[in-house]
Length: 127
Image (cartoon, rainbow, N blue to C red; front, top):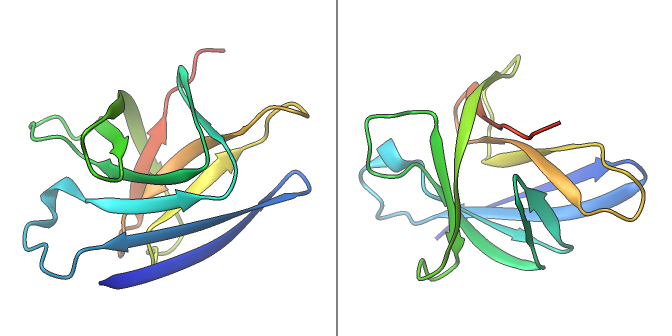
């Protein structure tokens, strides 16, 4: 298995994130990526406890949908609307970026970038 790691620092807290995609995964259209979070993280309407999660695009023609599931794929934590988010360079590894959140709140996932892509998926939060 291919492993990627990223150290992300937000608002004086560091969160270790590891993503991996199965080497035998021939169809990259779903952008399947696994992330392990060392602290709880928030997505629109849900807080994920510490653990490993599957991020993927569901089988649909709509490129703006992202699903987050348990590591084994049995529990769907949400299907989220996203908007394209751009970076100045391709992501060498799959990464997530975080929004600043109030003290005592879990870090909020801002966007997910699949390995080798300059355009990612920015999650839409209600203000």
